[in-house]
Length: 106
Image 1 (cartoon, rainbow, N blue to C red):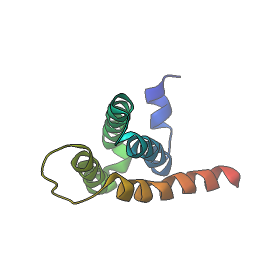
Image 2 (image 1 turned 45 degrees about the vertical axis):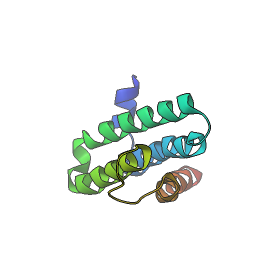
Image 3 (image 1 turned 180 degrees about the vertical axis):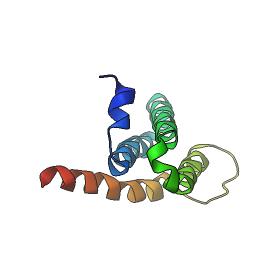
Image 4 (image 1 turned 90 degrees about the horizontal axis):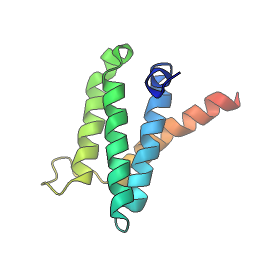
């Protein structure tokens, strides 16, 4: 099974938890490791796009787009429209990661 089909088998909580892992990696590498930072940003954007293309989440598309826009805003040098930091986003996505872990613990 390829990674795309694995992604399509995940719940929204699992997908967002995985995006959150990349957000956390970007947050950690933001100040010191440009290659790692850029890699985490690229991977997070790929995962956002996979989630946005998943038709199961059509009723949540605006929320997912907003999270992606905030992420882009926090990781680029453009004028910040949303005033969101990677630390803010890391906290937001941590709840999805925790929910995923609880799901597997039960």
